[in-house]
Image (cartoon, rainbow, N blue to C red):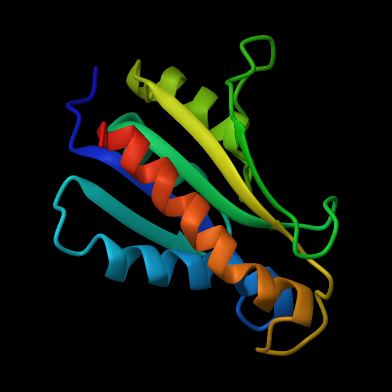
Length: 157
């Protein structure tokens, strides 16, 4: 069993050179500033979720995954629970989704966060570029509020 080192882990991914795919990283930067004074909140971001993150997940009481979504309407902000799929063995590919990361954390460390949620913002463009599309840029303030509320709820505030 892994010792819990963070009450809340914000784990974002995205590519800042692929337009709206970078929204997760922008939200992670915002969260790092918003919660910089709270040592119980840990914010990590990368271009993709990889197996090495299982240790961080196992060591967190709660985890909030943050990413863009090509399956949602552009600018739509969604927050949904993430559950580990016990029927499927954890994969160790280079890119993993939240349920697979939870399964890997459980498999390797015998530990899971008490709460796991996925915050997504619907993407309009994944073209080369560093600028967010209009719908995603307009959704940023709402996504920030949803992120903040989720973290505060995880912390019991």
